Image (cartoon, rainbow, N blue to C red; front, top):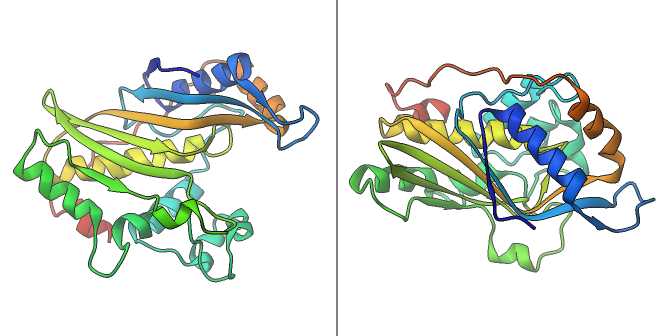
Length: 254
């Protein structure tokens, strides 16, 4: 368990630090001979001080940009249709309950259209515009039903927070569960990009991205790849240009 905030310059540094901490200090959960057993850090958190540097380039774990963009477009469209994302992410098919929708990992559906006409991001932007010091600019991904429903896909993300402080936006993502090697690069990309859209909507700079996971873990079967990454030369993330604020990024995204 850790309550220390790791300050990282980019997504690659965040990935390296997280994998190193999990392998060196993580608690062993499950049978070490079980590929699905893992090493886990509870209450793990880091920040990225240049959130636009979100594309990992490590030779052992470069971001699949096509899949990352597809995931983001699927998110911003408030989509939960399996067929639309399975073209780019075939593994998603294993999590559907009915072969038609992905009930939990469709974060954008839960944020942007939890029910008809309910767009949480619009509420976030309105709160930040009317009261820059607000502590109420937040979205919820988890639902009470997730605590009891039987499904192949309970959302790993819990929600997001947005704070206007020190002349810029700090965005925080809260995860119930986070696979550090397989999914963390995608999560950093999609949630920091979503946060930059919010920042652009209110005419602010996204100054810091914070990522907190109740359970950050690396599966036993991923250890060799994670160790190779830690032995790679230190890589630098590709930085995206700052998003323009004109013409409503959220409206263009939809």
